[in-house]
Image (cartoon, rainbow, N blue to C red):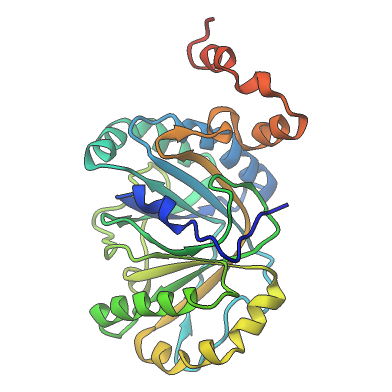
Length: 304
């Protein structure tokens, strides 16, 4: 059972991720979703986990079959046109040296993207991201933990980008102050430039329309969808609506179907070592021998 604390806040554990990136992913339409999700979790995931320099790697899988109330419709804030995603990825580093090492080695990773991704957009977060509150105890989830998790993407639109950024920080702080919101993590990436496609993966789309060049992302978690809906009706949230209309141009919300952690604090998780689904089996059966030192040596080197 997912452990949630009403008194403890685990947000500080994310401070070691000094440099971050948030990548949106869209699967190839010809690849069935289950095949895509399995490949991403158990083939692509362990490959990425072993790239030198990596300090933080988390896959957030999205569910396209969303409920009708992920985020309130607000007059004056338009939905992003034709914006469908299958996930959002965080790849982070403790230092610039670590990021450079990763960048030097990652062509082997980017060559794999064309097998399941139609489009990936890597938004750079050179100053990292900010976790304002996190009441979920598990630092390395590898599952659908039963919580109601959403990622909400906001676009500055025709509003002032600097004021948009300032508003989003204050907005996140406001949401984090309500006990109904179990997690608030804010990503405020640099403006995306189509002239410098990222990541430079071959045969994968990397362009965005103008309204998705300057964005911010809020990762939110609630106990249940009903808790989320009641929060949107609360006085605290309703009091933010006029400011939202003044500073936000576009919005889209995505339901999270699972969170899978492969690297934290420069250390492979069992999912990073073996794959996400094998890690779930190892935990379910208590197969401690599968993550013992001799097994890890065999897996890494092919010898004992």
